[in-house]
Image 1 (tube, rainbow, N blue to C red):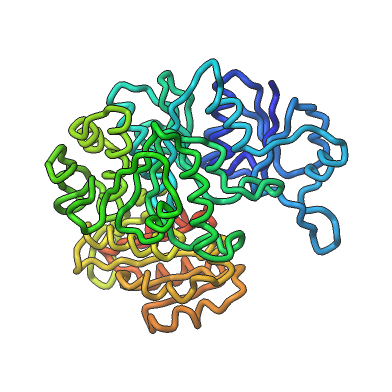
Image 2: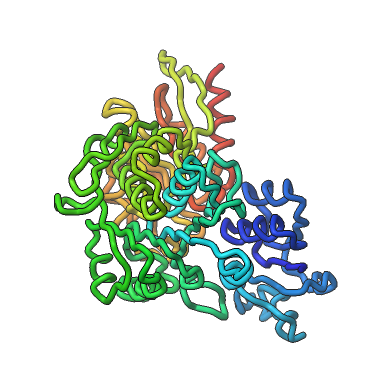
Length: 473
């Protein structure tokens, strides 16, 4: 089968492309501003990428067109379609489907090769927890397949078929496609589901938190009676989801109630794992933050449903190397300024929701201590943040930063006004160049520069390192 993927450089669609290629299909695709890391991974797999959505691609004549949710029926200011290829596909009556639907039919639900699907859902931590769970199952010898919305460093790729029965998938609640407004995860039909947390997000498609809770309950409805629902017992929103009905055994983790089935005991970098009050494993690793501790317990609990004992799972996490763009150290430069000399480190992180920003900063603060300055450099790039729905939460989420630098380009709301509670700690710039100038003007030896965005951030990491190199002289 030849499939042509529209929006192929998105993390999910790029993963679908990799799986399809490994399964023996011919894969091509297109996107706007073909960008790494997914473009690099796809080219390494020999997948041809086309820039843009021109109608000339009809000449490829694939068996089916697989449509990413970046594609819409939107029109430009002059009235022309934003995605002319999609309009041409529809006008010609050609076969098309969504990425989640193609994945379900051709990978997850093949009768000749039944898979035990483990789906990881939640507002935050999906990519990291999916990667942890896949690595635990790999360490246990179960050879899982997986599709992750990032690149786990333990594997070096975002997706693979795997030789074993388990298939671990990052289960996104965002809509499937412009012609299928259900959440992606309803297509996956997992036997094991992790519900990591649940907050309001995706304000461009969900009216309120209750609307997202309804989609999460649709996911719960698809888990069989022989399956397992692993949920964060500390989240009221998830309790409301399960109160709507749960037809599978459930296992809570986290929370403060000692009766919760799975718990962590100790600091995030070195903690015991308890099951029904008994210590069953111990995790010692380099990751920080309470959020990663909860991610770990969720992954251990899910792996237990496949028979992996907690001690083995905890041992695996001791070798877990995290995911690209999750507190990824992009470089360190020794800087001389004002009579002082010391290293300045630049980190890259995917955080974009205020809660994720806060937990990422908290993890770094715990790592470097109270006396080291953290400069938070971020762009409100997600659809929710662009709408300004959560702008009031930004000052509190940035509380652990010593200085906060915001890229305001493309926003319809006033970032200076939103960040006013931070006073002189906040700096706003409407271009990447101006933002880099502001950071370099403020930087001191010993500073930690934490760049946060769910996009490429205009290559700011490399620009900062280049400018810091000039200061090193």
